Length: 336
Image 1 (tube, rainbow, N blue to C red):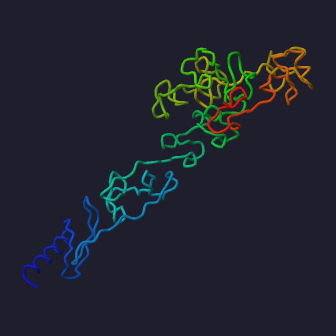
Image 2 (cartoon, one colour):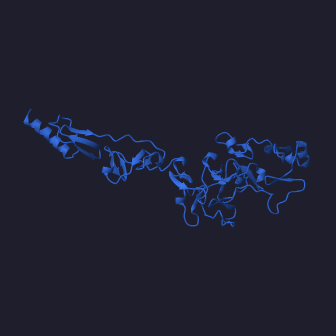
Image 3 (tube, helix red, strand yellow):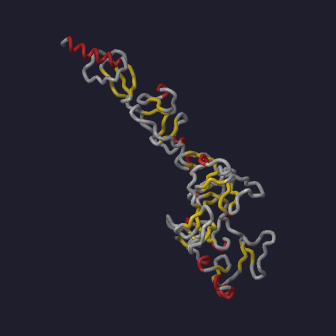
């Protein structure tokens, strides 16, 4: 071996032991001590024979923080260990902005949650963060009844008490129809929608909120985000509503009042002598269609509940959106 070849190998080995990012491909001169180091290209173990890359450990997939260990959080790249210094991280990774990651990459975007199941009871996943809802924190959002708890049901994207939803348009006030459990203004003939609502392709006025996606984006006199609108907070236990006209206090937040309007059973609410109060509504009772037609041809059908109704209510195609094919709504008992 020439003195020049020996010098080259010794220089490479010395550089590796000094922590200089040199990848030695030539044969080394002896074992020596192993030195671990990282630079912006990766992490390496170096000894007298050269430097060898240290691969980062496999990353566990996750849907939220609950999927990870107690010293980790969930990110878009999987579970990441929380750190203050490189020594807190497994070999093959370094501490970057408080999370361990391979030097040649960056930690993923934090995902506290991606589904409601990733959050605790009384919380929902909003913008990949768990947000308190229900009780006095404003209604929880939902897609189906399964997203709600405590006996609540899903109507208009919000979990609410079953008493707050409709099944038939006759349960709603004048000019409104029952759409997916909500009494909404009928705009199918060009009627004007209330402020904050837009006429949808289904012919009903729906919330047109685009101000917010979470409470964190609201403040001041309207600290609650409900259906994309920043709205006022309220006391659900107070007998006097502090909400604007056309809204009511639902679990601590003022929301558009889409509840049905019972017309009997309360103080001063009386039916005609020929009617009966059925589930809060004055109805003509019947046993045959003929009886109903003689009363009023518009409600000339004797429905299964023994009351006179129109054709759609007597033979409903649906009572809620869950009765319709995916992507369709239940409006006036018809899937649309």
